[in-house]
Image (cartoon, rainbow, N blue to C red; front, side):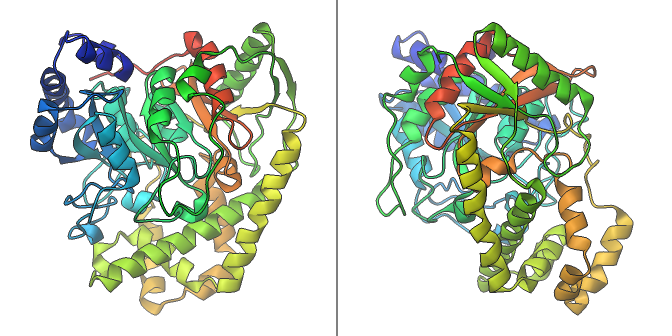
Length: 487
């Protein structure tokens, strides 16, 4: 299996089906690769090699039977296994049953042998949790793989597994895909169930799927994961054909609008702008109609709505932990500060901001009466260096007395939160639109920076139109510039 990393998941499954290789041999190759790179990457927080070996004996006959796989340590619960969510606060939280996601992975024949790193409570665009250490980008270990599915992106880009479980509540599939040179599709709201332990994650803003090296793997895996589970809050209409089939169809002539302007008015690296403009020219050469146009949405207002939801979710997560007897020191300082702000929000403020989501969705819906897709950068910059986005020491020192005195409401009224929104999202201002509108989106690795770092280009589609994205992605795939591991 010296050629293991050259295959995508579909290719490996075909080898197993044809008895050219066994599931046990594939797992051995994955484990050997993990043993080599993990001391540098630190992308796997739980190794479950024994479980994997047991499964590999009889992986079943699902579409991915025998393919090694890693779940994300957030929302993809595995019965009897700790569900850390990147936090020391969850060190004693044991999953009581599989999530719908995990159960469908097992039914597909995937051989699960661990869970990948995420920042505490999946809250950041970098994966540097204090409880588990820093996860590094295999393309350049001096840089982050992104977050919150940073561990998932790292294990795929490093060749440990061909695809890995991921989720996206504010860009957490697309951002790591862009930083690591992978393909990342965020499905529509409700396409993949997140139960039974949750109804809708992050008020429906978060979607679960995978990070992959090939478009066909993403499409076939969406066929595995999609469809309602018992008790889901609503059912999304199924696709006209299997996603794997839709991905193979020609997209036809599409009307594509594009923008390179940061929706919150912050700067964008010229290399990101160039990548979008180059992609626009490629699309025109393929016969698509492309013009510069953006939805009539106040990006600053949308960012505030997103951040309000985000703060409330942090506060709720911390409350759940405290109810299990967790102490304050088990949370990271940044998380405690965010939780304080979340507790300071009134119910009226939270609901008022949530109501605005409808306006963003209606405006984007109007945009899609004129265009089939929306093209924009995935991120404003390439992958930051490790520690670059860490809270400065002076700021951390200033936060401690605020926490001690419980001055959350004062901080909310000071105007500092607006600055916090801008500062936190200036690196990644383009992804939250899809989350708050519930629409599907994807990041394609279509460029490389002058420093050799991957650059992702993003497409957003109307609700329920993952097939349109996959079809175009397949057409563009010959132009992909995948990240090459340096380790």
